[in-house]
Image (cartoon, rainbow, N blue to C red; front, side, top):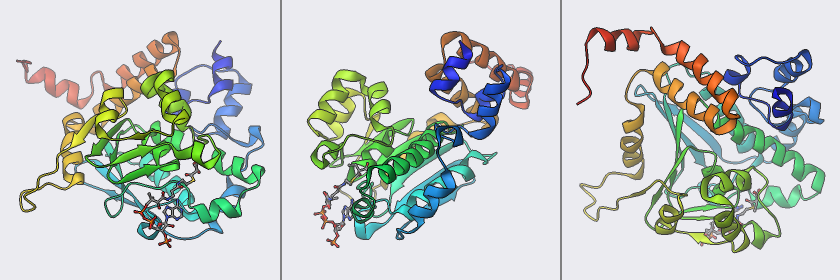
Length: 315
Ligand SMILES: CC[C@H](C(=O)O)C(=O)SCCNC(=O)CCNC(=O)[C@H](O)C(C)(C)COP(=O)(O)OP(=O)(O)OC[C@H]1O[C@@H](n2cnc3c(N)ncnc32)[C@H](O)[C@@H]1OP(=O)(O)O
C-alpha cells in the first residue's frame, strides 16, 4: 500500500523521514526532494536547467523578513512578468532557500509592478516548441511548483493585474489566493492549443472541483475577484481605497491577512502547515500516523511549556 503511494507521488522531505519504506522506496526518496520527477523517470534537472538558462531576462526576488513572512516577486515588467528560462531556474533556487529557512512562517508570491504573471515567455516557448523540450520544461516547473506548495510555510498568491497561462497555474501552487479588484486569473491554455502542464489542472480540480475546473479550462474563463471568491479559487478581495494617502498597498493588505495565521513561533506554524499538508496528500491512515509524529515535535516544546505555565484561558 505504502509503496504504491510512493510510485504515484514521492513524498515531501518531512513525510519521507517519518514513514516506513522498503529499500527500493528509500532509494527513490534519496533521488527526489519533495519533487515529482527525478532520474528514475529519466529526468535530469541539470540538463534542463542548462537549456533554460539560454533564455535570459527578469529575475525572481526573495525578501526574507524578520516577521517570518517572505515576499517572492516575479520580476519581469517589460514582459508583464512572463517567465524567462532563467527565471524558472531562479524560482527553483529561491524555493530551495525557502525550504531551508528555519525562522520562516509564511510567504507571499506577487508580481512586480502591480501585475502578477503572464505565463511563460512566449519567445522562449517559440524557441522550445518541440514536444521533448516542452515536456522537460513542464517536468521542471512541476517539480518546483510542487515543492513550493509543499513548503512548511503558509503561502499566499497576491494577484494584481493578470495571472495568465502559467501565471494562473502558479497561483494554484500557493495555499491561498488574494485578488485585487480588477485582477484576473485566466487559464488561457485552450486559446494557445494547450492544456496546463505545470500541475495547474490537477491543483485546480482540488481547489474548485472537477466541474468548475472543466468550465475554467474549457472556456478559458476570465476569473475576476467576485467569481474567484464564488467558486472558492480566491480567499479574499483586496480593498481599493480611493484616498491614496490612506490606502494600504496590496502587499500590506496581504501581509496583514496572512499574519492572522502566522502569529506564534515558527516551529508551531510549520507544524500546522505540515499536518494540513499530510491530510491533503496522504491516505487517512498515513496522514494520521504523520500527524502523530508531527504532534511529537511540538508536544513539550518551548511554546507548549510556556502555554501550560501561563495557565492561559481561551475566552
Ligand atoms: C499557455 C501555457 C503556457 C505555459 O504554461 O507555459 C504559457 O503560459 S504561454 C503564455 C500565456 N500568456 C499569454 O499568452 C499572454 C499574452 N499577452 C497578453 O495577453 C497581453 O500582453 C497582456 C494581457 C498580458 C497584457 O496586455 P497589455 O495590453 O496590458 O500589454 P501588452 O500586450 O502591450 O504587453 C506588454 C509587453 O509584454 C509582452 N508580453 C506580455 N505577455 C508576454 C509573454 N507571456 N511572453 C512574452 N512577452 C509578453 C508583450 O509582448 C509586450 O511587449 P512589447 O515588446 O511591448 O510588444
